[in-house]
Length: 295
Image 1 (cartoon, rainbow, N blue to C red):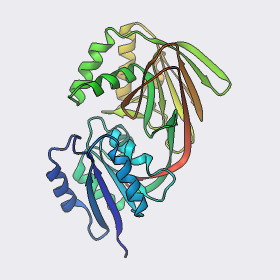
Image 2 (tube, one colour):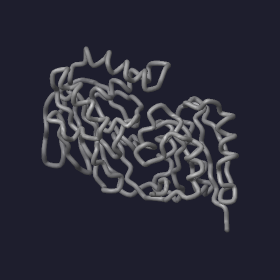
Image 3 (cartoon, rainbow, N blue to C red):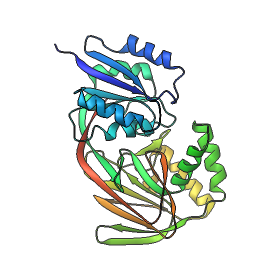
Image 4 (tube, one colour):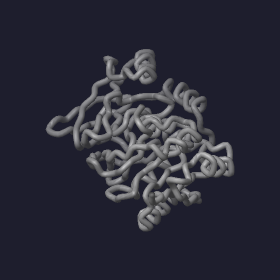
């Protein structure tokens, strides 16, 4: 049986206990009867994009993003419409996409599961021609992404503290949203545009998101008094945000969000700014991804 080739693209600044420990785990837990592997590390933001392109050029069978959602984003965008398959070793803080598709947080278990993993072809997305795989959006979540990018610490405790602090002074912005022939206007706490379901830490913003349906889930969290917003937000932990009276969800292949003032947006947890319009688009069945085998 011919072995498959794997390239591990490791973000050394993610939440690994040590890079040496990760490499030891790969040597111990990977099935070397099935795989030959190459180990590479990123040196700067954006470097994983180039490393993944080079892996594709070498006809590498599986390219594994080792890091958080940002690393997954960089690797994945180079694999769109290619024969190379995206794998994930979750090493970031939230790991939203990895959690959504079932990889969990245990690196050793994830490595052992690679040999029995299933390949699925899923949708990917763009916003103003920037790639994303998991989630994008504007509003409070984009503000938190911006604040997190500006800080030096990560982790659940940091995010919860930041959310508590910023929510007390947050003011919803007015947005105009065009979905097909419908225009929606109003003040929204958050508008999330989802391919997958969760931010990370099991905070599920789009409970019905489906990676293979060819549609974006557009989640509107309407402006409300603070206590109602907090109460609604906790629904993200039990997968029931769509049951909140503050939330409405639309589905479409494309959506345009227009802001009245320059504002933040995020994609896969990374923060950006925009002047006026954001145009989101689904790219159906465009990337091959490894999923842990269904039980």
